[in-house]
Image 1 (spheres, rainbow, N blue to C red):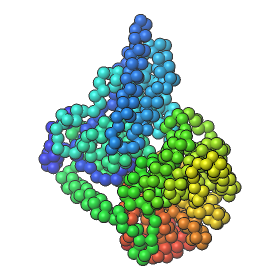
Image 2: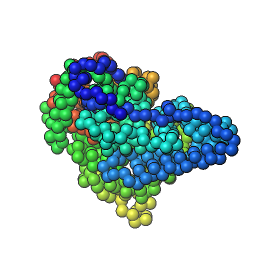
Image 3: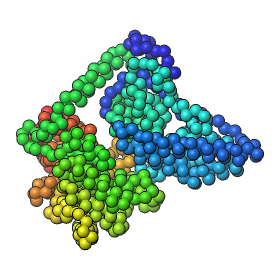
Image 4: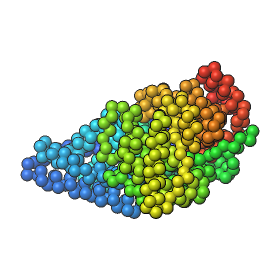
Length: 587
Ligand code: PEP
Ligand code: MG
């Protein structure tokens, strides 16, 4: 129940104010009232079952598991057309987790041997599993501990007979915007929340790659995750201000603060509307330098978003997302359909498809990460060259898709020239096979590589000469230059895109591309970060690729910048190996 507290009481300063911090994952402001979600796992009952009741208890557990799986499948089958695209995949992953025979077996064992009731056995096993995931070195697998917790929550709710996790939204009867406050939000719960008029999501758990973050981003709703104690500190009906960019949440703000944020929110919304007018305006700097603005996508359907945001092409299609979260790898035909659909959507604009970048924080289902240091292990092109049949299937699908429009093949994690030679050989084999079988394809694809391993950036010249284009993957480049695991929160403060060593390597790559007339772009997160746009222009960058939602902000910045003046400022600082003050680059 929402407490009977009115906006007026807050405006008059009757409630006490509190400021909380977390990780802001979706930009934007929200002002509204808290709806605090219960967490079944925190309220679980513990008792021992009598010997004769053990079979019934196990049956109760199995029925609850079946019901939860059936519910998840039903949700997948009835996903509305406008549901965030990632949801279907995420819901299926949750159903798979619940169907794992090991899970049922170990929970039943706890009921059998320790005579725990079903809820107790389930939370015990769930905690153990979640802890095992949480201890993993691999960031992607670590994040999966949240999935385990969420599916257990789901079954607990079925066991308790109350699937009623959400308050009755219709009964809330309020005109105010509602802000969801939860320990964590599973994809299935996100699905339920979609129907409501929620202004923001706040969670105790989760990080930038958590599902709450991913889905909130695709819904474009401000979100702050990893808040620690927000669920304990906020009460139903509290007034909240959420700043989704800076990860700030103000509880029961004073009238002055409220006014300040109302102004910021209004300005933000005005700015959003104004930006839309830039959708089809060219990205040209004040001194006439034409910048190419492309989009990064992870699923084929996102090509439509890219086009709607005015992208001039796809600068990075992370094809590994077609391969993840599933038991059976996509066939050549499935891949071909996916790639061709993007090519068709982009209607003649270039589509850069990166070959499978699996390994490190992205693993295939059923494949344990055994490398001692996965980020330095059998990853990306190394993995593909070690699995020629898997690589051949992808290359054939890419060449077939190229028959529908301009496809550029992008190779991740290249460090040696012989890898390029091997890729060309693999491409020739795939083309020969298709030709022999009379399958329509196009061999005129451009071949490029990600510049994300320092060795390649340092010795860039022969790569620039032999390849058709270069795309700088700053996410990994920074990780490898600074020896900072990009997914490790403990060293996150040292992950510094502005480190002179990083900037010098970017400049070096851009200069090499200019010398031999090969296009160079940046497709790492730096490209979409408006705070460093001027820096990248100053380094001489003319190609940017980013999430579709970032395109307009960056384009606006580009249109207000003077590229040559920035180049002079940045070059002189880089020559002195100085740390460049970003504020010195602003207009
Ligand atoms: C990068 O490393 O900058 C990049 C774009 O690739 P990913 O984030 O997929 O590793
Ligand atoms: Mg990378």
